[in-house]
Image (cartoon, rainbow, N blue to C red; front, top):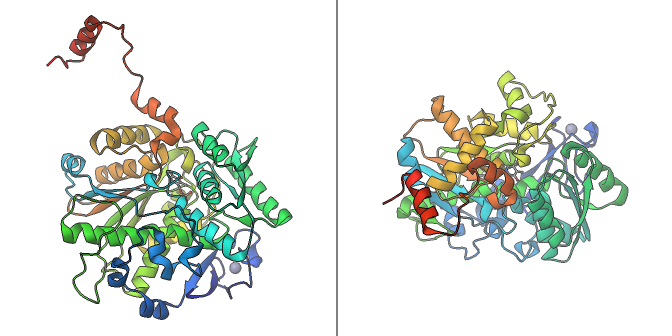
Length: 439
Ligand SMILES: *Cc1c(COP(=O)(O)O)cnc(C)c1O
Ligand SMILES: [Zn+2]
């Protein structure tokens, strides 16, 4: 491990590893820490050209920049290495020939959250903890339940009782103890923190445990590396990694120009921002991709602070149908705002109608099934395109954070019902004629 310490995002105080467990003690539960590394030592041990030759396509290939002693501590079910596609047909219709989709719905529990849970589980194993707890709108918990099941650690999970059924089913099938809280996600979160302190369980919440962001940042490394391979080898898609793009011993990654990502608590975008900062400090990238954070109009606390230009978060009452980004009091707002600012990106707002429309377009023109919160990233791209915030010559990646099967009710709401017909050819003929699909 190349960690040199932890730094508070609020007051800048620095701590040695092990001196504090989760947050800076000066600000209650709000003093989220950043993990600091010895970049010179990392650069001596690893480089893009050397990583390219690693046969491990999971996040373990970025071991040198992860807060774990060894990749052997990661769960045996591989996380990451998800596909990056060139969405050529969709991009051409929209006048954006360089539009790409990174489908993180193809992680083991079908969401981006596996990246963080994998590192959480690895840390818990290295610390000898046998119970992990987390609060979640659904995906973080589903991911924790799956990955703890792969190593035989117990998970105790707090979810709002309104979480989508598919996500609750995932928790139960993987054997988690599920506490469905009669209250909001924000209440489930606060209760989970209280329980962590009362029972000494290991806490998986990214807005609290600084090591979880470090798992999320793996997506930034992966996008930079895969994007470089796609461009150099002129591939339409890449699942996993290819090492044959390397031109010389000192090679660097050439990331896309912009990455669109949806924002709830702000942990994902904050993690991506950390990854980009690490890569820039290591000299591993040609430039910093701009991070475009997308929030739903009904859950816009981070957007509001960004718009005002400060870091003060006024809680809102969340109303969006995109449950994974339905957050009233975002827990990682500071990291999120700094990630946008540090990469010279922007925040964008979208309505629930735009999210449903984005689900349909992604499904029909890019063949990717996204849950509402994941489609929000694409809706944000469409909004940014309308507003002229992004230019057609740019190379744009849409990060799809969760699979659409997680919330089929929203999908049916986006598309409408099938045509119900009698079992006769006449009924088929009537219907296809009415639809103009005859021949
Ligand atoms: C958690 C989640 C998000 C939002 O991530 P934050 O870290 O809360 O900003 C977006 N999409 C999906 C599918 C998620 O599960
Ligand atoms: Zn502090």
